Length: 295
Length: 315
Image 1 (cartoon, rainbow over the protein chains, first blue to last red):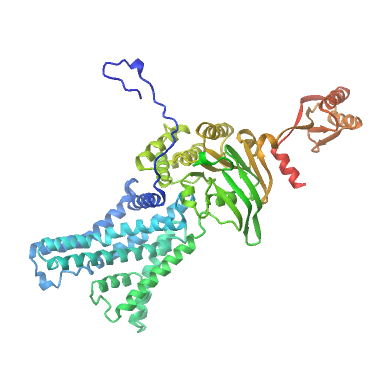
Image 2 (image 1 turned 135 degrees about the vertical axis):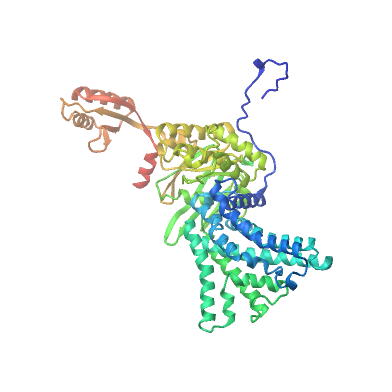
């Protein structure tokens, strides 16, 4: 629009018709496309920019995830460092277990939104007409869901570390403190990646979100239940726990911290191998479903 | 990028695509020139498969393709940042405002965020949805959705856009407006368009070039003016007259008697007359109509239409 100074007459004003403009700048390419899709998915999964009802469940899960950290930090601050001789205060690897039910429900109910919506809304074929390939599209989705799960799995533990440090109950010395932080990040991201992959693989089999949620929850809780029955009632080997997709990632987290974990009967190497197996199976299932999708 | 392409926007050589026992594309040698090109053919002709290969989403079984000077399989990501695509399906994220939808896809195609926002707005104004740009896609009519598809295809300043049945579901007025927009985008903004359609009439109206496929085979390609236009003979359309029974049959009989060939469908009032110069045929038609007390609606030089290419291919 033509600028009109304070004294100019509006008779000289013009309506600007910018019309269609060519773009000579630099395009962001594949990295920019992945970033954009990941951010868009994150907003969608968390219900940002959507109606209030889409935000309720993610907010409830985030609150539940942070609640144990807040309670234990508060207790430590109020009652002191030697709370019940350290019996009550959880280790860093134990903290995510306190909100595992909410985490798995989030994995089952919200994460399918990341994939199912694109197929249902026709976005997949549009995305594949951009610099994205099927692989980079899936990597964007995995990054997004992993990022959101990290808010639930990693962020509360980091807050817990900071809270304990503030209450003079954290790791001794800079080296131990940094080691704890690295272990929290590595184990938390590994658990988040596994849960994200399992959720996305289950969601890839259907175009209906409800069915996707049911399949995620049935596979995760179903296998947990079957393993419990086989070990509890049929005297099965403890190594059957390796088929439990909920607890085995958390067991790996404990081993990363050098702890014996919840299943000390199982050696550490099989725990890592089982998690690798879940990673390969989930990633392969996801890729098999998408390698020709949208063409 | 498009400025560098002097000859073919899309060049395919010996292109074949086989799915199991079915040959979707059969040894196509195709060159798509700058401007608006119509990719025509019935359902199952291979149009969508051809578009998939052009976008680099499928590797051809045999053959070589070059789009904007790039190999779609090896340089697909780079190519697709310069190509816009409007799919046939009219399904969108229902609760997403049109401006967010267009902006998001412009970003995914490589536009910086601030640029994507302003270009999304500009593109929606251009397609006539400026006032409606903040409306949720789920509340829009079919015509508005088709315009949104066009807006998202052009928002990232592509050199080439591929539009799959862009007038599907539109009423005649909306269809005219959409075709005018597509023509404008090519002629005013220099964006080349490959328009896939099974509606030959709309391709004849706006396309500069045509690629015609039938069951995966190329049956014609080239400039539209070279493929259709005036040909030998005269087309006449007669009117039925209640008090002169079989006046149409009488005209046909007299034309045959004059040594002319008459091609027409049974019970049809439109017919092509061949076998002499246009002036001689016109004279013979005039006399036959006068002798038969028939009534004429139209008489004009016979024109070859795209439909004739498909009919000739079927023979």
